[in-house]
Image 1 (tube, each protein chain N blue to C red):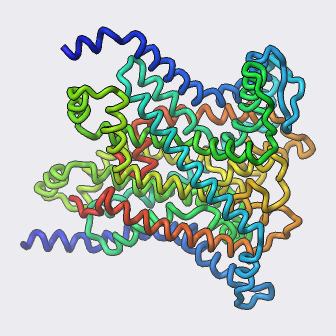
Image 2: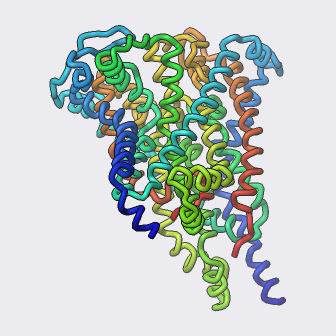
Length: 300
Length: 297
């Protein structure tokens, strides 16, 4: 009894170790967040005003950016999960050298998003694909400047980069389970595909860890910037907002840096607050999920 | 018996498996290979066509075909100033990771184990902040940095990169502290160690590999991080990720356009350190990206 109270006593000053952490968060997170809200509520002559929000809500480029962001997020997340699970199926096959394949499949993860934007651009990878389709399969050329071509490619390149992450998480979930589950399925005569579809897949998709990672992925896709930025150059929209590749982030970036728009601080801040509102809702979902994935236990 | 029949018919099945594995490998590294070769001015399209065609802006043009030259790699090193970018990024990453570890290690320990005040609040705030896009912070940060002389300084950018790594660092370290078996902590307590002694002499030593992994992971995040460095770095502190997009044009050759092939060469050079680190910590990547929730085995 005496001992435990002595211990409790010794924890008294431990909250001090959280102070440096809070100081950094205040500088680079809390202060900018609060200041962003303040800037968004400041009118052109410095008074408290909602004019920035009304300007934002009546701006067609804003709504265009919202829909582009949504399509981009949903599309890339769905493709990313599908590709990642496909890769998982492949590397769980019992063949020699699968470790090497697993290593190769991780390659895209190391590529910077801004480089991914260049990789999948019309003059890089699509060059080869076009030649292949045109000269070997005798298909007509894609018009690379049509939205029906470049938007799916852009969304796909985001998925290409992050599919290995889904694979790695899926593998860690499968490997943390008892292999006897798969052995049992094998005894019942399940083929490799059946084992994956009926045992591995439900195991992975029901895992709170996987769901958590998918939500994180959606958040990052929602804020995606580098890939759309590079595409806005390849398809000829570097200097105007409201283009079909302008996500919310790119929309804000263009408002800040293209001289023609004159850095409308209030408007950009209003868009930032809108973006923040969406993320806070998702963050709430995340916290609920994290509670299931990893209960916040006292430990020790 | 079942084992035997399985072993007897690997031929078609496993050949098919290998074919698919190789196709998937092509899908994974083809674009990177194209980038590497594009830097040498080797265009693989003629391999598929017999004709050297490359489409620029949707219009098919005659392509260079295969004319290997190291000139774009030399350009990447000289015009894009790759060594300079590499130094900048390393310095920024070093500052950022040191600050994150200095503030994060003890905090992560406290958050993992101790009933300290505000523990739940901080743990979940860090998680929520992980969800905040840098673009929700960037305008006030940009204004604050320009007014206080932090814009385009190593210290300023290093601090700003905490946005990209701090949540991950604390959550991941917290996971490593939680992974230490409870018995270890109990044993230390039985020997009469104070909480600080348990932290310094036992827990800290056990998570050193975890700290290394976390730092390497943070390094990759900063190495590839684009939006924050694009906006908060200038001619002096420009990082690799920004440089492979725009070159270092402003300071060295403001009139010189960085060519597409130079970008590819620089992009490939930038990829090499990242892939080395990524492969080195491959076992822990799932853990890192899931903020420590996935297991590392």
